[in-house]
Image (spheres, rainbow, N blue to C red):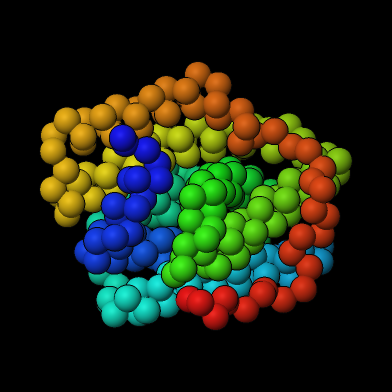
Length: 262
C-alpha cells in the first residue's frame, strides 16, 4: 500500500535517493542560515532588539544543514548536486518571496518594512517546514539513525513558527497589520505553487533513481496536484492566520547543539 511512511522509507533505504534527499534538505537549510545571518547584520537601529533572535534563527538553520550532512557521512555517502528544479529556496526568491539576495549582499541597513517582509516570508515557509517535520517525526521518531535528528529539527521548526507569530503580531499592533496580511496572502499563494512544482520535481528525480513504474509515479503526481488544489481553494489560509503562540520568546538563547546520533 502506498503511504507517506512507505514512500519515505523507500527513499531512505536506497543510498542514491537518500543522498539526494539529504543534499536537498541540507542545501535549503544552509541557504536559510545565510539569509538570516545577513538579515541580523542589517537590522535597522530601531529594531536591533530582534537581531539576537534572527541570529538564533539562522544558527538553527545552519545546524540543520550540518545534521543532514552528518547523516550522509554516517552512511558513508557524499553530498550530491541539487537539481535546480528542486531548489525550494532559490525558486521562492525567483517568485518574489522574501528579501532578494542582491539586497542582502549589500551593506545597507534594512528598513522596518523589510523586516516585516522577512517575518512574513518566514511565517509562510516555517508553516510548511513545521508540517513536513511533524510528518517525519510521526513516522520516524524511533528510527535508530534518524530519530534524534528528526525530533530536534521538528522542535526547532515549531520554535521558528511560534517566533514568527509572536513578532508579526507585535508589528501588527504597531500599525503594520494591513501590510502584513497583504504580504502573507501574496506569499502563501506563491509558496503553494512553488511547493507543488518542487514536489513534482523531487518525485520525478526519486522515481528515476528508484525505477518507479509509471502507474506509481502517476498516482504520486496526482496526489501532489490534489494537495495543491486543496491549498489553492482555501488551505493556504492556515499560512496567513496569526495567533499568540503558547511558546513565547521561543528564540531566546543560543541554538541547541546537534544530536550526537547525527
